[in-house]
Structures are given as structure tokens and as C-alpha cells.
Length: 259
Ligand code: ADP
Image 1 (cartoon, protein in one colour):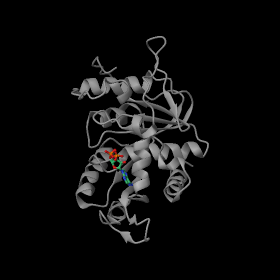
Image 2 (tube, protein in one colour):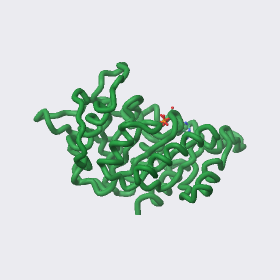
Image 3 (cartoon, helix red, strand yellow):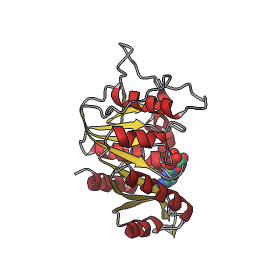
Image 4 (cartoon, protein in one colour):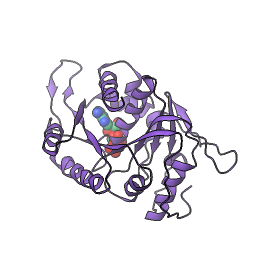
């Protein structure tokens, strides 16, 4: 996978997929992959047919977050069978690469890899395909927006100013590419101490909501910085699979996003 440069402008949206939601962030480490996996699981719990495509070429984390590690099969050497976990149909570039090998790919190879993950994976019939993008504004984002006609993009940011600045660049890119930005999510928002209930604003709070208002974009919600979220992600069972307060926050987010 990804070995041969492929250009072209033909559409790469899988035929059975009704809508594509791109999850983006200005920079890495803000929880874009965490939000992608939990949103996918929350939607699946509501009975949607959901796919999750991990297109974060430089740091694919969905295999770990969704708890899968086997290499997807390709019985005919052409069509790749996706994996299934927590009710979600899943494919990750990380499952096709040698573990621990750094990815040093040029643009055309990245485009080829995305094209293969879109059009050679047997996604089947899906209500929504969530695409976990690499951070920033690069070739994968460009190819997805130009050739896969995403329904919209969601931008994940922490409340910190620096992350916000980067998120604004991502918004500019989607505007230029004419992909609607459906809204902003504040991740790593308020910390609720599980012992005493005290609330701490570790990375500040409300920064994303204020920014959304300025940009006249929907503010989709705030997700707390939370130990269980981190532990669940590392353990391969997203927190949204449970029924605690964070799982409920994801259920609300899922309701708001897919009608
Ligand atoms: P990104 O995809 O933006 O690089 P990740 O989703 O990989 O970010 O998250 C980076 C790290 O932060 C991971 O260890 C993840 O478990 C943790 N994390 C993400 N969101 C939260 C949160 N709301 N609370 C606690 N830890 C989080």
C-alpha cells in the first residue's frame, strides 16, 4: 500500500458511503484521534452504520485506540477487507505499514495511499465514514476534499491560544477547498477532579466556543480532560463504549452531527 505514486482527479468516494465527516486539527496532540474513535463508537451505538478511516499517515493511532492489530486481508490482492471493532468498520494506514518504521512519503504517495484506502477497501454500505486526518494542512487534506467530496469537516482544538491559532489555519484551508466546516469541538476542556469534584481549567476553557462565535461557526461541544478517556484510548476500548458522563457527552455530539 502506498508504494506507487498515483495522481489523477477521479472521485475516490466509496460507492456505498452516504456521507464523509473529516475530523481535523491544526496541530497534533489535541485529541483529534480520540474524538474520531469515540464519535464513531457513539454513532454506532445509536444504530448507524459507521466506518472509521485512519488517514493520519504520520501517527496512525486508531489500531491502538480501537484495539485491533491484525493486518487486513486481501484475498484477491485488490480489494482490502476492513476490520471491525466496537460496532465500527475500520481501516488504518497503520495496519498496512511496518510497525516502528517512520513514514517518509512524498505527496503523490500519500495521495495514492488515501485513494487505496478509500476505493480499494470493502467499506460496504455506511451511513457515515469518519476520516481521522493528519494534523495541519497538507496533501491528504487536499486530496480528500478535492476527490472524496466530504459532507463537512469538524475541527478539534484545545482551549489554548496556540492550538486555536493553528485551528484557524485549518479552517482557512477548508474554506478554500469549499468543504463546509460543520463546527468546532473543544477537547481537553475542564478537568473535574474525581475525588473532590473541584474543577480546574488546565488548558483554559471556552477559548474554542469564543472562537466559534467569532467565526460564526457552530460550537459543537466541550469534552473534559479526563483520565478515563486517556486510559480507555490506550486500552483499545473508547470511553464512548461505556455509559459514564463522557460517553453521554459523545452521544450528544453524535446526535447533533448526524441527524
Ligand atoms: P491527536 O490525534 O490530535 O494527535 P490524540 O487523540 O492521539 O491526539 O491524543 C493525544 C493524547 O492525549 C492521547 O494519549 C490521548 O489518550 C490523550 N487525550 C486525548 N483527549 C483526551 C481527553 N479529553 N482527556 C484525556 N486525555 C486525552
